[in-house]
Image (cartoon, rainbow, N blue to C red; front, side, top):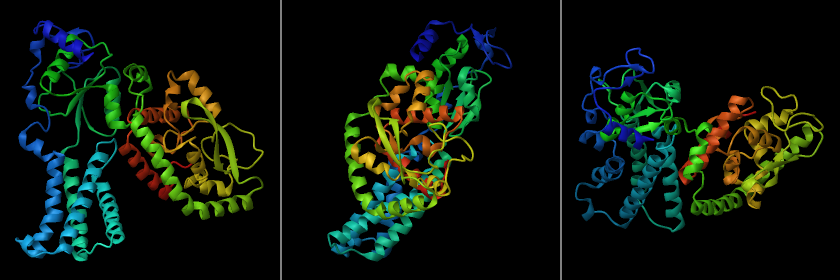
Length: 462
């Protein structure tokens, strides 16, 4: 589509065309191109100047933070010519802290590229986690190290990285210009970027990171030439569906056919195999820790209401294979209702059920589903057979959702919570398809982080 726009730009006269949305004009009204002033577009792209490119460069942030967090404490504690005065304990601390800090920073940078992520919020948890791994490794291999230096670099690393990430998040926030036709205009109220709604095909007095347009809309020739000019001058032009992915973390159901045509809903097989191995290892490590909690939960369920502690239900799973999912029972037995939880206060839910649902404790038996290979720790939630039948009728390509293993927690659960109405279910599917398209290690890590937050806050309980 964009290639055709550029071709039309090269073949069309520059002094004629029609305009839509210029100074209040409607689609199809004629306006000459000379009526619109086109500044030098290369100057209208944000972060295009040399000093701006340096400031938003991840490698620059990495080196800057490493200097303040690791090298500066060395110079303060042991002097400028520290390499002549320090021993093996100090070198072990320097090398270990450098590795921990650099891995933490790279992790934050990778996660910051995902939607709705504030890098400065992740700094302290990531630095703390990698320093914990460092201490475990040093203790395991009985390596002598300088305790004071490790403590100082940890504190300075958290503080300096937080300041750097906070400053960069403000400076590098995306500003996207919207061509106000078709579905692109619907993004104006969404979160995730600063939006600039264009009245005319010009970027006068505004610098942007890109331009968003519904390339399927019936745009006039002058708007198409404007998009071509933006591309030629290295201002990215995004389709409305791509902008929705970048800023909202969703994949529009209206554009599923395009993803199918491009083959982008096929997960990476190498990571798929690696993830399966990590699932098994993680479950084997976690089950001994949660068995006492599971035993107490089962006892509470049996004392609260009659019936078995474990609930079983047929769900649609990997490669459209049905399987039996295990959960702690959270409803009274013998109640008649739909195959899913209704919105609001569901009278079928028990007192204990409300608590275990809020903190996701009812999902713990699914760890055994993961061991069996029916599920993964992270993935789209498996739907009941009743809901699967509904979706399959109304959503083309719905079964592409089963190209990955369903999960105990997923992108839709941490972003939206439980969905019980039509709009909520559509949003859930859009999050699920985003996950499938962007199936990756770092997206799984982000979901794990937000799942831990859910366990503490109870967000999205039903």
